[in-house]
Length: 199
Image (cartoon, rainbow, N blue to C red; front, side):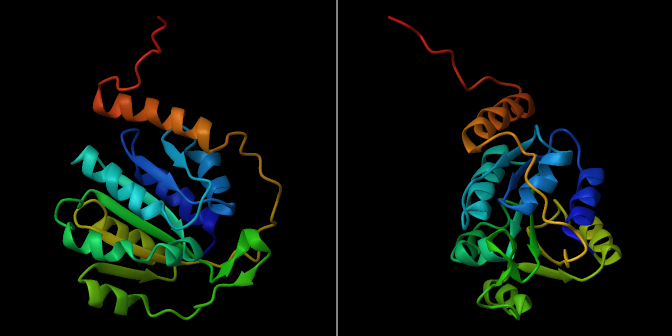
């Protein structure tokens, strides 16, 4: 299973009211190819889940997906204590961790912990963590848990069959913020970016 297959499947399961926060690198490119207008693309690592958590709290019952990578997720692992304490309030958040066990955009360097026992993190923080190795496993578990209870889906992928092509994503984090804000305005049916008034 590749990142592309995972993102393609997710895009088939979500509607226009679903809000997405995406990590950088290959993941952001794959998401941009299919879901450019309802995704906040972050040009940073370690904060995907925390920002998604805030969005999920603000949108209450509207679905939110954090699409993170193993390297980025491990940089922000301290968020587990918070999401554990508010998991009933963020049942609308599903966390997808694309686990390729390397820092792919950094040249394929292995992550420092490439054999992490994700289920132990789930037990320690009383969070539903589901590790999947096949697309069928992902489909079955996503159908069962997504947006019903806070769930971490750790999706083990192998991207060696995919070429690391140049990015065609033509927006940066600043432009993405405005596109995503317009998406949120449609979801909430209210304007919250006001025109700039001149004196």
